[in-house]
Image (cartoon, rainbow, N blue to C red; front, side, top):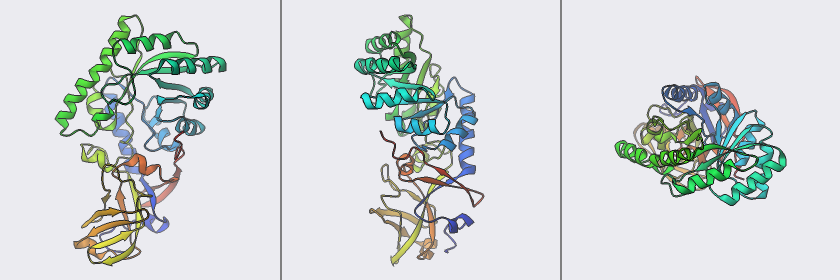
Length: 365
């Protein structure tokens, strides 16, 4: 194996392409976020849409998180199966099939859900009341993302009142996610825009409270905005997700305090010409949104994707790569890359110490 490629003992034990998780870096990242939250007004409810893994969720809870966030009922079911006791589905759950599953899930864990539609609130209420369960409902407020959510004035108050009067539902507060600002650069602009847009959540909170309705929670935030949103005095929960495993995108936009615990291990399968190596990790092993993965070999840079192949430009020390060598790359986007795999290969001090199932993989329903 070329001297510039990564050669810890685990490399020989793991076939490729493979998802690799450095446990030491993972634990350091979890501790850093726990330390950050301990100094602010909000608690941590990490989003599991990145790792989809029971073992990682339990480590986050052990570090002080108050619960876990999921994007889909299927993810929540997978984590509840693994014993996670408190889950927020930070999304609208619509239709009789999904609502029935959501209500069933409420028998197994403390459960919350985001709402932004009156008819959906009625359907959730009917199903929860019929099943004899209680579901916490957070009214989602659009703080500028333009995706889901009601406006922060009268619409938020109207929906909060409806939830409050709906059997089987408990009005728990507001969902307010500033996802459109996670990657804004420079950081000074991101800061200004987060402060401006998240005031919409405060506006909704104040409007609802002025009507005599308590707003216990304002839940939102992501890894890219946590140092800003996490210090706003009206925030009660942070839903940061990517920080635990970390990807190249968040590192690029200011996440240097968190280490890249997540990599993909790939094998060089061809050296078709000088300056080029081909590996066995393509679009089905590393997702391309946000850009190319970072190759952890000096003198190597990702060049192009195809379905089953990745082309890597090599120069200098990387010219020594040979067919059969294994290299690691850091995905630009961790969430969608993790979803391609059944398991993490967990390594520590260069050794393979465990495998953890990506329990929520493909659970998009």
